[in-house]
Length: 113
Image (cartoon, rainbow, N blue to C red):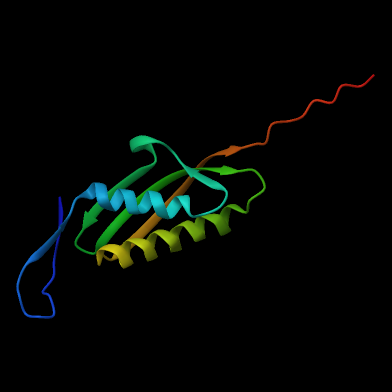
């Protein structure tokens, strides 16, 4: 379990604990917001490492045919970093995106007479 300590503004001391599953859910949500990609299911799609410098994320996705790979990968990095930092107060040190496949549209077969 990852723990983030925070002192509330009213001076009371306490701590907020985030389960790694919560951070995984936030990353899944962030990737689903990006058009043209789908994260691989299960543990193959996401690996999180909680380090002193911040969170390191390895994300594996399948991309739809016709999208620009570098642009979509950068969009995933930005979205994951923004969402995790906004929702948990963790810092994201690094987001690696691996495109492991391309989904091609179903080819239509045209019958010729």
